[in-house]
Image (cartoon, rainbow, N blue to C red; front, side, top):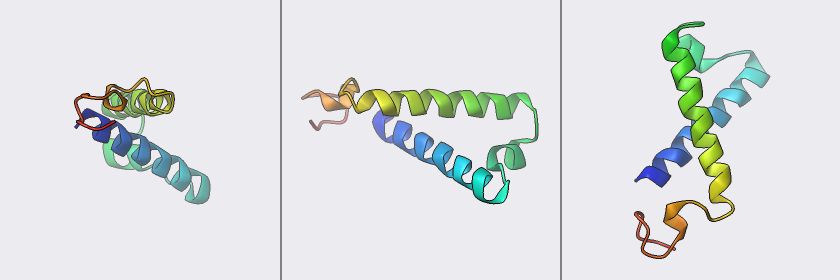
Length: 73
């Protein structure tokens, strides 16, 4: 479940960057408010998810190990 959450958060972060580049629309700030603590927390969580998603490319994610929490290899 954790690996899927990381993928979803990283995907949402990528979507937000795409919308920002194409339409100057920042969904995080639109939903949570510009410069709020909640927006900052969301950026931090999404950033950590992005880092974990990158690390999973090198098979460091626990889900990549046999018998990991996701039950797949």
